Length: 339
View (cartoon, rainbow, N blue to C red):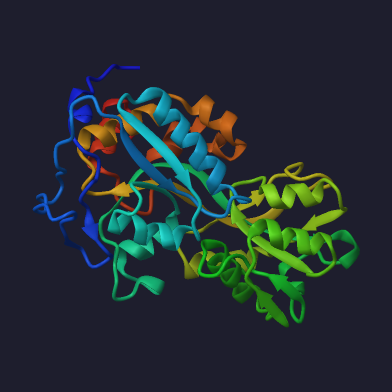
């Protein structure tokens, strides 16, 4: 791995003054003058800079992925300490990256694309400064039910009682998209975290629970280890409808053996999940983060198996739904990874 000098990184504050809110206008803090766009005020030489990476529900995939990313940066990029924070998920992370409340975040690609364009939930409040550092895993639509329910497909959930995911989360958005494509309307849809939803399925309170995360989803795995569970699939025609309505999604499967008792592939859809920063992050820092993550994939996979997709270098930086940060793009170009 090529060595870069990080003296500049140690003498430059990291995103201390970022664009406030999703409107794109900058503001000063603490009474000091606002820094020019794309820059940050100087910090004492040698001072470790504390950053936060926003994730999601701690029982899903984003939290352990964010923890693994933080660990690799902390161990391999001098001058930075990244702390991990739970959140309401990708939509909240978009807003928090734009405003500077967090400096890095795990964000599902479809949500990031909507935020940048000001579409969907972001209509009228575009988060135009989001830039990708890399893709780290694929979030897949996972519907868990007890085997005793007799359910096998998502299109059997009409009139059922389901947990759809945390309110305004990517899990909820994807779950609603899947139900719409399947042409069914459950009798009750409740907003629950991935772990709580799966637990209520295991306890017989809910007929099914949705998760949209890297596999295996921790909360669902825990229930499947103690109860006989099934994972509900989509028909090919339903998946075509999902992808047509949202081009960020693509057809895939939950491979056989992902969960206990799952002896066949489950047809579903997914989206790339990204590590995202604000466009004002300086190029050298973005380069250093990209280099550290791309060259320590084995450490990331050890942190969570969902990141195994990163073993294919093209997955990391190609066909992303939002623009790469220029500093990250520079690293991938030099490494011969960018098509």
